[in-house]
Image 1 (tube, rainbow, N blue to C red):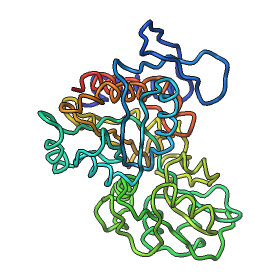
Image 2 (tube, helix red, strand yellow; image 1 turned 135 degrees about the vertical axis):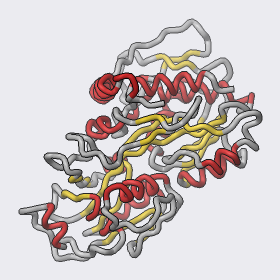
Image 3 (cartoon, helix red, strand yellow; image 1 turned 60 degrees about the vertical axis):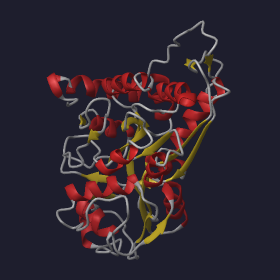
Image 4 (cartoon, one colour; image 1 turned 60 degrees about the horizontal axis):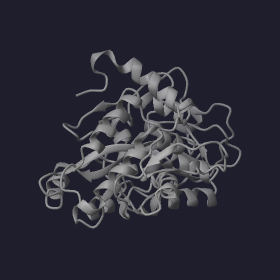
Length: 378
């Protein structure tokens, strides 16, 4: 099943752009006592959209992706302001740790920047009675190549060069490969300090999938959540690597755009082979998501992303965080709260809220499919 099927890619592109620029926040009023209005996070006196708390509220526990950490903070705060008895306790730890805890039955949902592997799906059947774990794309973003090089404000890199930097094949900022991509830039004769994730990370897996498609063989390792490159220094989580780049001169790393913005870090543009380098912006990432394809079957909505895109204005280094849940066999006492929180998160109001923080609202056609899958959870 493909999102591009039946000539719908144009509609998806329009929908994605519309979501990035403006989302309708019309409240869907309700007389249900379990529907409450959020005060929002900007202090505005304007009427906030209604949030449906579901028939039964309950505390939720989740863990996983740190790339979506800022988004989950926004979503859970907005939802919790309206639904006082549904608290969401989200621990990071990385995608690998989140999936592991989900398959141990310790949490209601996991956040993962990579879809479940077949072995992980099999393992999930032990905790999803009568069902299995599925991938629901909820938080989309882009991976920024963040850097701290004094005097360099508009760095341009490409797939082979980025891969070589993170594998210690390029070790100086004035290396000929970087100079060629940045004519006129004052690149220092300084050692490059690269930082990578030490935890099993879906962000790392997406970055290395990009390397596999674009590095022309410079990256010789398989795509993986675990870091395999030579050299560099490690840090835990997107927050950890971002903090290191902010503190260390002549450094570089990779992190979700919201962490780049939070830390006031510069992001490199990527030479994809298009007419001009593509900036790391939500609009440019939305152009890539508009052409995503669904690889999952049934209620599983895992996506295939084109990391090697050369389309004008399409940023290639994107990721989507899946909320991993049971299609059947969710715990009865938390099912209503889980469905209500996910429905808010994938709805217009939730996508708008995280879009304002540097994430990428997903195309309308896709959010509609996720909404339907959430309603069907049992």
